[in-house]
Image 1: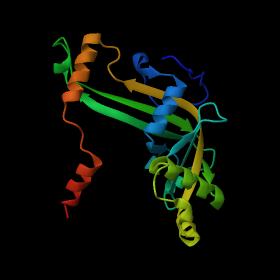
Image 2 (image 1 turned 180 degrees about the vertical axis):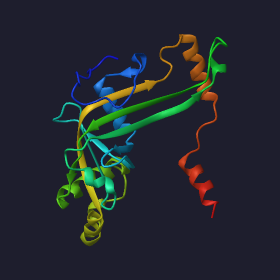
Image 3 (image 1 turned 135 degrees about the vertical axis):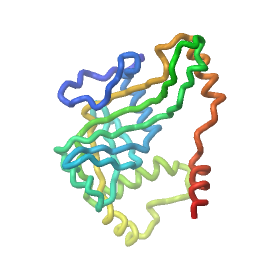
Length: 220
């Protein structure tokens, strides 16, 4: 892809197997992807493997690949690795779908699953100062609430905010390694790509959060 290419990243071990046709190195494209698909898996391996699912936001100024901000519960054992020494991988997931071999131009094919992911590796540092943590939360809320929302985080009572901030710990992670894997059938023929797009458009859509939650509520 055209655009800013990721520079050599030899010191930080890769976290993802990426065949060459599926490798995306356009830094700006990957950063835009991370900003759009910002509900992530935060993965750490010390003292044991732990995964937390959280929303985050990305800033790109002043660093080579960007800095990721988020927070977890103070009771979450994973918060203990926010010390600037332990490595974490943050996984950003894009759309994904089953691909039927019946969609291809030739019958000699097998099913597969197409998807897009970005892995960001770094060493999270704590954001514990109440003022800095308040600013982190305000930016996170603004990202997902939107500028035109009637909700105003700044108007919540200080006593409520203080209690909430006391129950969480924030983190910031400067990205040391950025990996993009886009398995979208881009190495197939133009006829197959066209057929895949038609098949995906006609396929049954995944359930929305509304539909999934409504069915779950019926469990009583």
